[in-house]
Image (tube, each protein chain N blue to C red):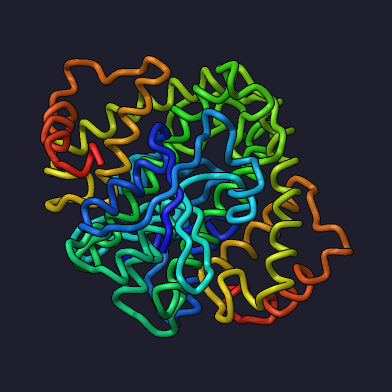
Length: 209
Length: 209
């Protein structure tokens, strides 16, 4: 297997933490998104969508999404479980992953990609040209901020987003909060459940992997 | 278990087809989105996010996303498998589900919700107010249309989106193509692989469930 990563980007960070939590050692290639290396031939032939993370399997399959990479690694290396341990918990991990992605990550990404000079003409990841939409950046900020409150409420009733156990949903949530700071969005200090959860997760060695 | 559905809406249709493919009989409640019944007390107390599908489990857990509903039902009723049969296929189902959702469904939903009179002030599903962004509707159309070509190319190399076997990714893809027609987006006639796949899937009894 070969893992295509970019040390500075939030999306591959999710898979990187997942791999570290599993205790797996996977040969890793850095793709320099800052230099737009994802659009050049070596990587483009591996993932024509020009996004990281990507995980090239030994049979030639290339997985190009955090969801597929997590699923594959959970299947070949079930312990420690990161996608849930019983049917309800598995479902709740899926539910919270979806919420973090749609309501959190998407908002922060919209805020960043529709304002930053660097993403002009590239408001959506990938090789196709999409112009920035300033109103979408505003909407993204509003949504990401609202999601901090959703997370806080949830973490007031459970230790982790999907319930009792640390899971891929927490990885996604943690990376989302860090990512939101790129567009100067920070959880309000009164969101103490969120703050305590972040503090606890920040001590896991995997998050600095 | 109780399944909250809306016969006329594309999102719950995915879970409805999934349930039918599994051969499960689940007590079903129709939530009339046309009359905005999802915002009223009876349903709002079940899912405060005011979206369908929702699946209320016997232990009180309510799952409110196609991903979590599919995961739960696959776990309690593994056959026929709809989320993949081995690690690589499971990963590819996750990968194509993500692609259909982000590149297909999201585009069509953006096209619809940012233009239709009905969705004024409700450009994002749920109880929070979000104004329409006309430029986002245009972008959504472009993305959904581009995704028809992606699907066609994939279906030229495999019988189904995730490979040899029919899966939840095909359900999502099929519902997406039908949904895109709401905003008058139809696959070009030269996309024959996509057309043949649609024709084959249209014969499955589940799609008219």
